[in-house]
Image (tube, rainbow, N blue to C red):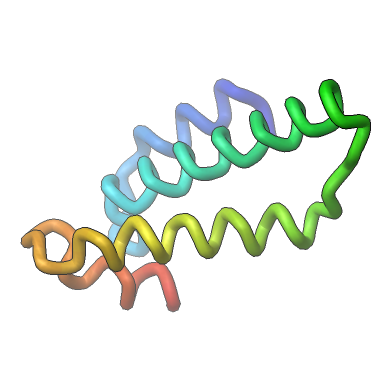
Length: 82
């Protein structure tokens, strides 16, 4: 996926993935990729893709859980888990 495709996906409208969830997923993905890049450059250690996917999933769940009482976040976990 290219940067343009990520931005296009983030801006698209979809009933399956609300805008807020797409923004959280994009932010988490970019953050984890950046951490992986820094880990390779500075520590010469590469983390397996499966571990990065688990980290992204955990971060998204944590973001939603921390804000679960806010109106926009109430049903977001259900959508994420589907």
